[in-house]
Amino acid sequence: MDVLKYHLKKVLKLPISIWDESVEASKHIARSIALSIQQRQQNNESIVLGLATGSSPIKVYDELVRMHKEEGLSFKNVITFNLDEYYPMKPDSPQSYVYFMNEYLFNHIDIPKENINIPDGTIDMDEWKSYCEEYEKKIEDAGGLDIQLLGIGRTGHVGFNEPGSWEDSKTRLVRLDALTRKDAEKDFISGNVPYRAITMGIGTIMKARTVYLVGWGQHKAAIVKEAFEGPITDAIPASFLQKHPNVKVFVDKGASEELTRVKSPWKVGICNWTDDLICSAVVWLSDQVKKPILKLTDEDYNENKLSDLIVEYESAYIVNIQVFNRLQHSITGWPGGKPDADDTNRPERAKPERKRVIVFSPHPDDDVISMGGTLLRLVEQGHDVHVAYQTSGNNAVHNHDAKKYIEFVEEFCNRNGVKDENLAKAIKLLYQTKSSKKSTESLLNVKALIRRGEARAGARFCELPDENIHFLDLPFYETGTSRKKPLGDEDIKIVSDFIQSIKPHQIYAAGDLADPHGTHRVCLDAIFLAYKGLSKEKWIKDCWLWLYRGAWHEWAIHEIEMAVPLSPEQLLKKRKAIFMHQSQKDGAPFLGDDEREFWQRAEDRNRATANTYKSLGLAEYEAMEAFVRWKDF
Image 1 (cartoon, one colour):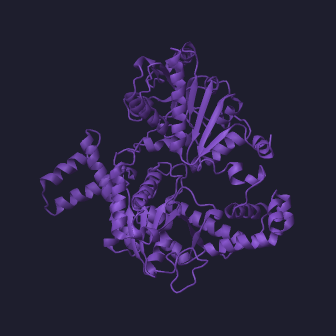
Image 2 (image 1 turned 90 degrees about the vertical axis):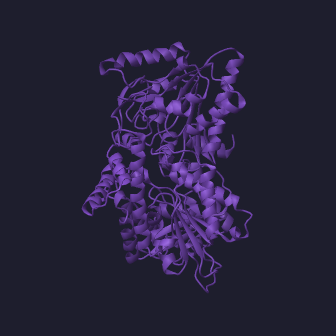
Image 3 (image 1 turned 180 degrees about the vertical axis):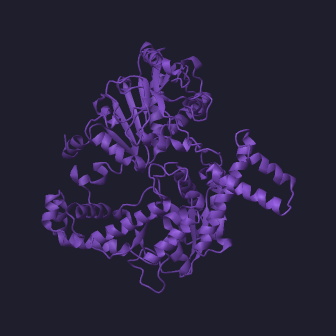
């Protein structure tokens, strides 16, 4: 066993496969499952699959459906048992896992209905114990689980086995953790998330012959590290999988960020010291020993497993200077480039002095939340700045806020003698939000207009002219629920046509892939695909793409390529721009597990970035907004 594998084995308790994209990893898993199904078919045998719900396995199901439709993969020999179901829950409810499985898998394949088993969320409370015992018996009678597909929750739960679940637990009724319920609010627009669920136990899962566990996104990075590098504990139920003889963990780059071999690979073996990795190591070391970069010594490096750097670069001084200068050059008060300046070591070009700029905002407030200070600077410095709101954001407005606006219109019309038959019908429908699909669409239209008005107010506060404020309303978003349609050709065309109409020198886009709702990822993919389609245009070669992050996550210091300082006055002005989004204040519908309002998150994050630069020995600023340039085209 070589040195790297030895050290990795000491750190990792089970094998973890890191993929660039969750889509490709999901296809790989689906193909593995399909191969197992086909092998059993050749022997005229059935196969028993344990299935999961939530966003993590959706792409696996998409690929299985594609293989069925395009490659003839049959599911007639497949028996399925789902992990869990909310309780109480009617099967025809859009929030039920019966509904979920039918929508994403069962309605599109040839599995016999009698082979599908999903916990029943309608059983009487006094029957749950006998029901769960029968569910366990059905699994055993079917021959046990051949393959179990799992996601991982941010509490470390698998299925609905919350922290405190015991190792040999079986199918049972459980009480849901507060964070689990908080994460589920995106699927329950009314906010009425059940307090209980029926779930397979840890012991049931551990009996599966093969386990595939998937984790996608930066918001899963911390728990992936704890579960698979930390000790086995009932506080993190997924950690019990360290004892399973055949478990395979698949994560994307975002979910792998906290793993030792990714975050600090020098701890587990010999490194190929790229400039990026050197910067990461020195920033880490500075934090470890609580010294500014230029005060780090050879001894600091040697005592913290970074002696290889000293050997390669002769002394700590040379390494320190290299990293310090790199970070120093990332700081600029001229995000659009400084006119008539030597731009050799600046993040942006000096020419052209007046740039055409597009700021893409996935939701109608991401522009001011994520880069409001930079937006203000770009406008103040004379650039032709356009903001494009990619989605309507209508799903993130409370009904009571919508009703307030509806009543305003109604009373305004009555007071001014405005009588319009269509308006009267619309107002009537808006009050009937539970009676028909049409009334729901009407309500969503009101919510979209609310967010559009707030977006205009925020952009105008940043002194953008009205003609530079654009609403793209990408179709993928317009489902009325948190489950969106796949990105389509129409979405990409809208983005591509808009970029072509401006021919920008700079594009700013949300690279915040920790967004728990996935909208940022889809919106970014639309931009990437639009870029690809425009690749033959001459002007696109001079169009730089800068990625910002939003309310959910921030770039690591060693990743930052442009840091824009904000003064106390600029930070306050940014806050006021965010305040223009009144429907997102005082408890917006989808805050996630962080109860702070979006303006508080933004300020805390911007101040933290500035404080980190200060702790590394660089200049002290009130706050900083950070960007990474995307060059993979």
